[in-house]
Image 1 (cartoon, rainbow, N blue to C red):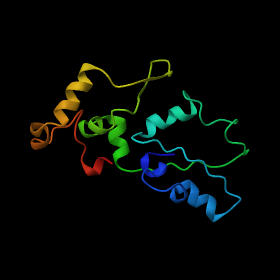
Image 2: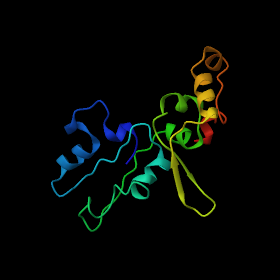
Image 3: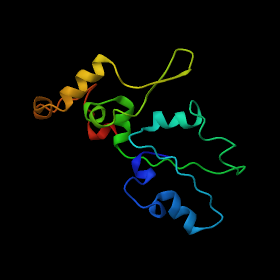
Image 4: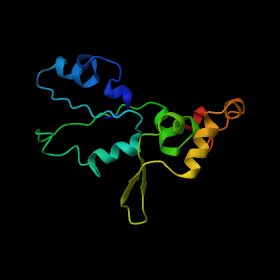
Length: 139
């Protein structure tokens, strides 16, 4: 599981992480659940809301899940103008007070303003970010 790195965006199918694992050992059954632009909070949907990872798809009784993490994934969770500029197609995920998952596409006025600001020369010059810029030590 992970983002476009896990998916293998731009690679031939036999060069993806899942394909390489399958080629190492024929007893390994790898499944590729990388999604372009998604962060860890959105990957949860593959199990919960989208029900894409279930017993109908994965026949094995047990196994492990490997999440491919990059530093940008926290920006995807907490937001950020740079992520909003290129990650606009990925769904936003929230939980209500009862713990129910709510998924929606970003289409609010706030999102549209932030996206324009992030792609502007002024935004780049002043290194504006939203909700804030985190120092490297945060990650």
